[in-house]
Image (tube, rainbow, N blue to C red):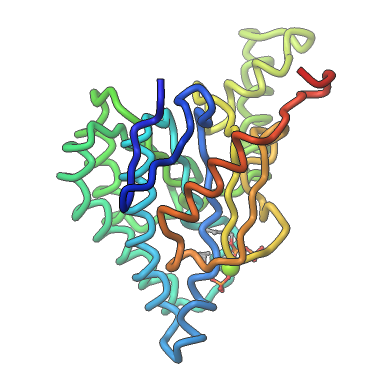
Length: 250
Ligand code: IPE
Ligand code: IPE
Ligand code: MG
């Protein structure tokens, strides 16, 4: 079945089975986008929200099962308070402003990350969007908020150890499935494709366990400039990759 997507008379040219089930994006370069134009960094974050809308809408149209967006890392708290405050306001505005669109697109909204460190008012609006969209049956949109893969693994280890201590799990029953099911991403498929904008060749503490066999795709384009045609290029390159998972060419 061809994936339904056309733009200016051009079509993506891929079949649904060639598309990733789960796409994860490291949305980087907002600050550089703004600095280049002589704007404050926050202007880049503001523009970045438009790229989020574009990618969410296109992913829904293509029938992608899950889209995970890295919005704030556990290390981003090192940034100036002003930038962090404005980021929080932007996030709150996004979850309120996009609620209707999330419902219209039948999207199930979720988050990963250490929620307790987020401001209460932001968390309340995030949770409202999660609740209202939880019965939706379309794409799962997952925002990584105050997310760090290492702290996720620490949290998983603590919770596994406590189950062992309580006698609900034996140490030798711990396997990859048990670990996966204790991560924030429990129940989600692993990402097949990781997109990073703004050119850095690193993963910056994002989904370390889950991306073991993901295909990595990096573009120099800054996140606020990321368009449907960049997204299509990533998808076409993904479709052309030979995923071997440690085996031999299929
Ligand atoms: C990514 O853009 C967004 C967040 C980390 C919140 P940056 O703010 O990291 O932009 P650059 O990397 O400084 O250009
Ligand atoms: C990764 O970008 C985090 C997000 C996109 C939210 P950073 O800008 O924080 O990553 P580094 O510092 O370049 O590794
Ligand atoms: Mg950055």
